[in-house]
Length: 287
Ligand SMILES: C[S@@+](CC[C@H](N)C(=O)[O-])C[C@H]1O[C@@H](n2cnc3c(N)ncnc32)[C@H](O)[C@@H]1O
Image (cartoon, rainbow, N blue to C red; front, side):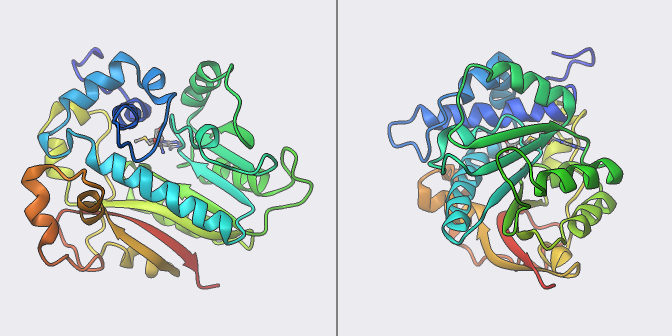
């Protein structure tokens, strides 16, 4: 617990929370993915956060579903010639340690410096499957962000040349940023080295989050009423839009009280207003 009594003392603590759901999924006999490091990374605090989360998400279905969808979309991009992954706000994600990646593939992670230092320590004895580079950077700071992108997309690690078909992943990040910052990121990612942007988007959850004191130090900020059209207006064209609840039902992870809703006509992800919706979107820029 933090001084104000909330389990989450800052936005980086949310990384422990989502790791706890990946750990629980990994322990299932029919797990959708196996993340053997997640339990240790989540720790007691992560497990307490998962147990205290609002009922609508307490079984972890949104995180588990988005993890599996993103695993699949990352591997699809690699089959399509992706030559680098930049995971912005990677948190305690361990994909470089658990996905079947080419040994010389360059994967760059960024997160706030305190979190990356903790992760460096926690995973010091582990060997990633690919060339993994981790940087501490405040992605909301436009100057630091640009400097990071220049480095991460250039000849970094074993890569002798700049990336030419990179995929940028923002998973569980945008919702904690203000709209101006998200628009800044959308513009910063328009670069010739970047082929795709893979992001998750959550709308209509602010009330659920603000009803619990747990999220007082990590409030939801970005919930565009026009959903994926927010990105389209900035030139990003969605290639795939995956509705989390529908996929959760197909994966057998939707809680019983949401199963009926998963069969109802789906809201238009471009006209959401305050309708609860969450999904994963892979986008390509028009330029
Ligand atoms: C919910 S976690 C998601 C972590 C990871 N992507 C995952 O899905 O497991 C949110 C992450 O965003 C990071 N984050 C939030 N604001 C950030 C910022 N301005 N710069 C860098 N990272 C940030 C936090 O430190 C935290 O690790």
